[in-house]
Image 1 (cartoon, protein in one colour):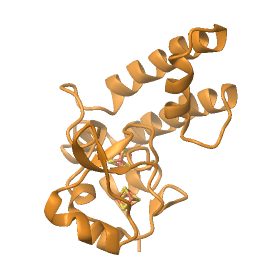
Image 2: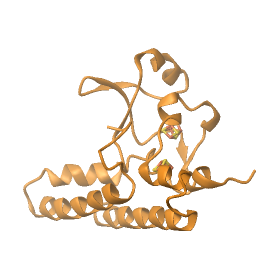
Image 3: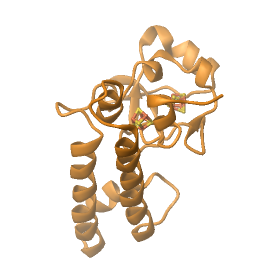
Length: 161
Ligand code: SF4
Ligand code: SF4
């Protein structure tokens, strides 16, 4: 099966599922059982039902339960993906943005290796007052600003937390 447009971009990306863009995906109360039946954890985060990211169903940037993915996943598209669907950006340009995001996140990962998603790890370091924390603040701020400008919605997250 060949993919095109947003689907083709998403299988090269996965940043909204791997914890790079969001730490949590909001979950509707009526869907909690469905998430859990799919093996997706649901927790309470700042008073809101949510699924922690990265998602265990993501493998090599692809969703392994794509056909069954819950509505919170189906309803999400990042600003870059929306612009692609509206033909405001061409596919090669959108793919280049995804590649650059991955490169920038890879730089963080190399600087602060560890088991958890690098944006979350860097955030933890950023709250420390020591030298690694200060360096992490600068690096994380730069990556967040770039992601805000290129993938996030201008008015803030639409479905992630
Ligand atoms: S961040 Fe955007 S392009 Fe990447 S997988 Fe999510 S919706 Fe697709
Ligand atoms: S279920 Fe699939 S689409 Fe939803 S967060 Fe997990 S990997 Fe992404």
